[in-house]
Length: 167
Image 1 (cartoon, helix red, strand yellow):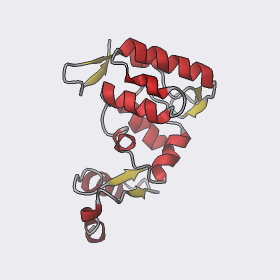
Image 2 (cartoon, rainbow, N blue to C red):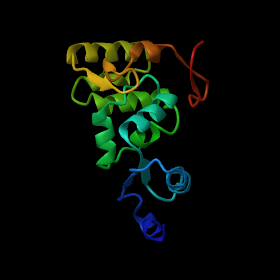
Image 3 (tube, helix red, strand yellow):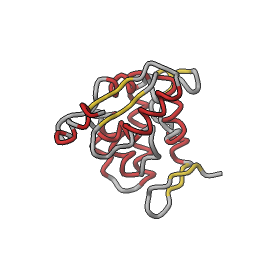
Image 4 (cartoon, rainbow, N blue to C red):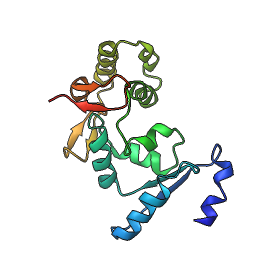
């Protein structure tokens, strides 16, 4: 921990990824509770693909946490949105920014429209043109990255931080 703390002065320049390869609960608890939650360091503690996919699904069930996204995190993807995926629901603005990253170069610049329905339609259109499916470890099937139907069923409270699926 002391060695990692020495990097805290460099948190604007250094991202540390710790890829856990164990199911031993005390070890998992230490890394997830003691290190991953610290705001003074850029540390992303990640588990195996399926375990991370389950955590992402818990908070952001509209996203297919495909293996390519996991590999990006393992390689130290510097955008903070990737670290948030398994920690809490993304806000509408964060979802737009994440989709802009995901579909970069695929007309993602159109995501600047504030209208949520327009954003959902643009996302559908981009994915329809893409036609690439990724293995979804939750559904155990090939799906698109963004489940726009599920995303359209989400409600966002006024401060945009508590995203829930409408019942």
